[in-house]
Length: 406
Image (tube, rainbow, N blue to C red; front, side):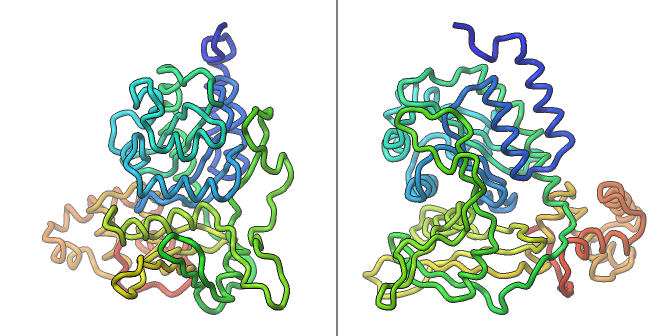
């Protein structure tokens, strides 16, 4: 039987995918179309797509899930990503020469050697998986995982290569999305949203502001636009996404507080914070995402308690400060380290001579960096640069000492 990738229409489909990613930004509609087009040449039965914060590699929006069961499966997925030693973790793929790899080949043809295969794939009726990080300029802007049903044909080397070749074009679509100029819609809560979790990552409590924030967060898309496969759960069909806040306990005066069905964007930050607390990971548990025209920051951090108790975790959702957004925007414009330093000092009002003295450079070199920055950001003046990097993406008061490099 001839594989779809070897048929005559395959080159036309690939060209359409490349053309689509060159001309559009990453949003829910693009992820839907990429799923449909890619399936024509690389068949799969379930999938996960998500944008990523390039500074922390944690999932942000847009994101899309297809045929992957309930939120419980999503919990297991992200716990495995941060707590279980396994093959093809996204952070490992980000460091490899090829950004795509299949579970079958990574385990030498024995996927049962993978813990993820036992805890996630098999319970959902899934077999081989093909993972890819979408990267450009050394930055990861998103990732995806495709699955085939248990007993199906493993992904081929040629199919891995197709996904690897799409890494940079799809990353560019995600990168361009970060450069959208926000147009804030509606009010936001007056205080940060706070959620606390027990040592196992189970939600314990949350404040009223958290409910308000969660209603505004983009729901991870649950789709089922592929034919149903035995053993797979079809979610939502083609219906619009359900309201983001899911009450799992019901109501009633004496009922405990309702639980929140958390999206992937919060689950990744939560499990990163838990992994840092357990000594299994390092770095900040933080993700930035654009919601209803506003940049938000989701912070995760461990809470202190009795030494014998498993560490509890908290998530905070709040409007992003300029210092949170600026490093992401700088990366979206592909500014190098020195270019970011010069841009920060320009935002602080320093002259060319003062920038040169601060960075121990010649004024000629500083002018060269400024010229490069102006070309990348497509402006011609310092005022235009500050407006494009900061004011267009953050409507609040600028921090007088914004650090662009993260």
